[in-house]
Image 1 (cartoon, rainbow, N blue to C red):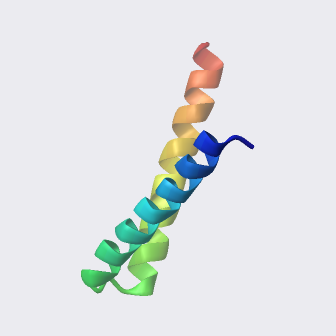
Image 2: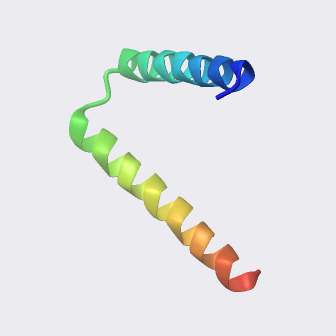
Length: 55
C-alpha cells in the first residue's frame, strides 16, 4: 500500500463520518433509513446489471 492510497482511505473515512453525522442530525428513524438503503442498493444493482447486459 502506498502513502497516497493510505491518505485517500483516511480522507474517505473522514468524509463518511461527516456524511453520517449530517444524516443523523436530521433525526431520520431507523425504518426509513433501512428502506432508503435498500432502495438505493436496488437502484445501483439494477443499473450495474443493465450496463453489464448492454456492454
